[in-house]
Length: 309
Image (cartoon, rainbow, N blue to C red; front, side, top):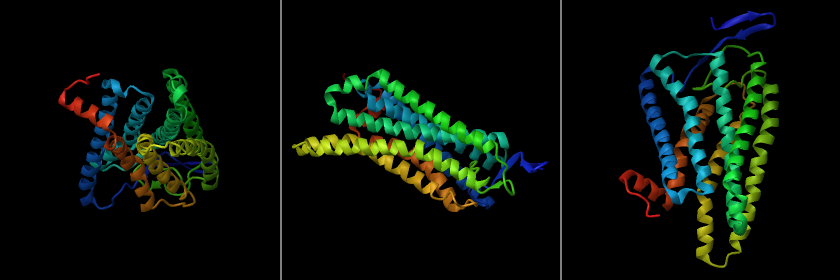
């Protein structure tokens, strides 16, 4: 059995993940689709990272943060999809309690770093456009590293707090999770929601406020440029980042709006797929599609040519 009796009730020692499909005939199709998505995501993000490392023109703060974002995207999809693929192959649905908590910790850790890193990228655009004369000083290599280190530290604190809090709770009812990764939201819903909203207000609300403030100043500065070509060039450096921010926070807001649901549904699975698969897969496409610098670096890397500078 996957549960053991204690004085206060029943303690769960493992969970049963129902996965994406119940029909055995559809499992090979799901396996192939998600394996393809995983390979595309990892390959795309590692290609972006390699291009940034080998291309001297991309050794700037904006691409330093983009390289870190690519690493996070690889981590986010690796935390959930390989384990799901292994369960599809083995047809084993059970996951040990400790493994579930570990997956939960790393999922929160990487998602939170993503959140703070997007804020650092917004701050970088603010300095580049609104404070160009002092940009190189205010966004030095030391400052870049500090921003990334602080992002990881804050994310670690939040992920550890959330995981430890969940580990102290008794899980209700059956040990069955209607999801393809460990979403432990059924236990003590009121307390868990209070924790998520309180920490979420600080850990997500603050970055959103800073991003909005940064881009409000950017918009004001760009609109003050008399040249249409100048305005277009300034906005073009922000377009990709704004698109990623809208997708990231849009899916996150929708996810947290469903915290009151005691039972996970197919909608939660769809949001989970978007957060863990679609979002990391779209990021390299978004950042390379409208970026001649990244496109040129990728092409030179694929053809073996070196940059002229």
